[in-house]
Each structure stands twice: as C-alpha cells, then as structure tokens.
Amino acid sequence: MVEPAKKVEEEKKAVEQHKYEVDEEVTAFGVHASSEKGIDYEKLLVRFGCAAMNDDLKAKILNLTGAKPHRLIRRDIFFCHRDLDIILNRYEQGKLFYLYTGRGPSAEALHLGHAIPFIICKYLQEAFDVPIVI
Amino acid sequence: MTDDEKFLYRPELELDKVTKMGLSNIKDIIAFGFDLEKTFIFLDTEYIQYLYPNTIKVQKNTTLN
Image (tube, rainbow over all chains, first blue to last red; front, side, top):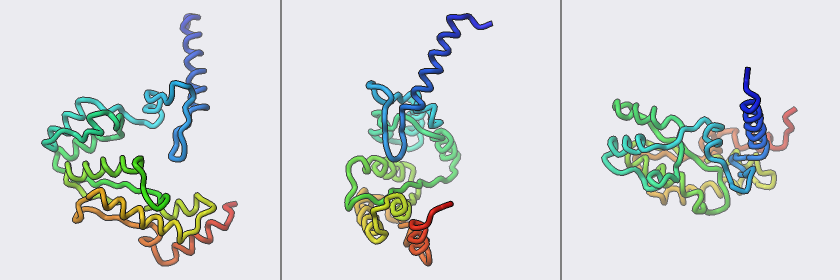
C-alpha cells in the first residue's frame, strides 16, 4: 500500500507535470514558459529525448580532435545533445559521418540567432573534417 | 534551404520572393567559411526542379480534405 503522504506527493508531481505540458510550449515557431522562472530545461531534456552535455563528452571531443571543443560547447550554450556519444564512438572507429542542417528562408539577411547553428556546424566540419549538406 | 516549406507555411509570401530570400540567405551562410570541397548547399525548389515549383503553388491553393 502506498503511504498517504507519498501519494499526495505523487499527485502533486503529476499536477505539476500536467501544468508544464499544457502551458510550456517550445517549438520551431515559438517559445512560451509556464512560469516566471522561464523554461525548465531539465524537463525539456526529457520531453525531447535529449541527454545533457557532460564533461566526459567534452573530454572525448578534445581527445578525438586534438583541440578543445568550441567555446559554445565549453560554455554550455549547447547544453544537450541526441546521440552525440554514438557519433563520437563511430568516429573513434574510423567510420564516416556527415552533417546535415538547413534554414527556412527568412528576410533578406540572417540575424545573430541564425548564426549559432552555422557557427557550430562550421566548427564541427573543421574539427572532424566531414562533409556538410545545407 | 526549405523555401518550399516557408512558402507553404506563410500565406502572404509569393514563391519568387521566398526563393529570392533563400538565395540571399545562402550568401550569408557561405560567409561562415565552410570547406568549399566538402560543402553542398541546395535550394529545395531548384534541386527538386521540374514540376515542383508549380506543384507547391497548386498545393498552397488546395484544401487537404
């Protein structure tokens, strides 16, 4: 049997999770936080099936490329990833990979926000010496 | 460059205009300094080519049900 206090705690958690799912919206088209504290990145990781960037991965990049990871990675601007560990393991075994990114055309010129993914792609292309398709 | 997607998603935009913005954005992207030998940049409407630009113009004016 579940203890009453524990049950209350669980219900509280469920309500919180529901509130989060209903109110917090993060899509390609808009970002909306459910509380004044802003986006809950811990929950965002779970929701998008991401894993946190960690020191082991950064050390592995240093090891494989012979240089410190890009400053955007070192400073945790890129705070999470999906399957980066798998790609690094493949690279370690001498297997090939390539980068694939893109943009929906917007206005005549890009702005600084658009630059972030391209800066990191340029870094990855250079560091791992791989092809990129844009 | 997904000029086709942007064209379909934004009702007010003409295809010519989106394609032009795409080409302009590509110039900005080139400026990041990618490796010329290992970089391939393409525009959806141009790369799929043939009937595609006309296809999406029709698609935009057709309901899905």
